[in-house]
Length: 438
Image (cartoon, rainbow, N blue to C red; front, side, top):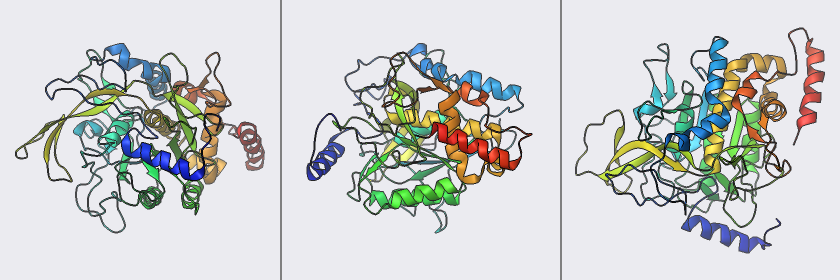
């Protein structure tokens, strides 16, 4: 910790005070100063408000080469990016906009947001803040209201017409199945001291266990926890990795010290930091040797919320949702493109990338060839070796291996060939993983 020195007690107070009063580990939220009738984009703190233009939004997809990645899959017989891959989205819950779901154009198979409004059963809890409810983001007074919807949109979102002229939103893996699992109202978790939910750390553990029970191929966690004295998160993550899940977590930002939160700092987890349009490391993001790589995270466009009060619930349309909040208010929420900054968005982009990679190589075949418990490590190693853009001056010791490029990821070779025996493949895998271990 080279910026400031804190005692343990002072650090806990600083983190908790910070969490209670503002932005969190996973994203930098902007004050919404808009009038309800003015669908302008919300900006990061201190950024001048403006209506985003095409190039304001397009740059992140261009840096990642999302279109080229989809075209590569199509040339290899994969028409629906992400289809068949299960993504557990551990976050603040979601607003179930139709634009997050794909039905008609997914070859009659279910795709997109998996949201069931019926009460949960004991064996299928998707909301650990209010276990009797669906994972609805219903605390409009919370610091991170809408956060889960924002991050989900970068994975499975689809909006042909937006408030950005000439630009359509399409998630990285729009045909994957995304299970929203609500564990908190806040992306900052300080032990079991709630900063927005109830017993946040316990909820996170429950969410990870639920993801494993669902057989999630990818677990994405755009939030962070601190002070897990009993190592329970480590054990839950190790279990998920052994089961073959790729676990991706936000590296965090904005505290005066570099504190990589849990689970991002755990071995085997893909810890993601944020890059900028200028291909630099986003300065508020934490730096550490445990960071795997960066993905676009500064001024990223995503699906956001515009809200107005209702006297009574009204019928919804394809871009709206009527919400009864936890406090009893009735809100009409419209989906529109907003812009924010944070490692949350970098994490969501990376989750989409992992989904496409798994779809290309098939999780069952990967498990058979390389071992189920090695899938996340293999993904990390392949991406670091073959899928990084490394700008001049990039600090690979503090900001990760580079900036993720999804097209390169999909074109990257695996360590073993079809002609390798199992024994020879095991040797090649071991060497490959060792050479790229963090």
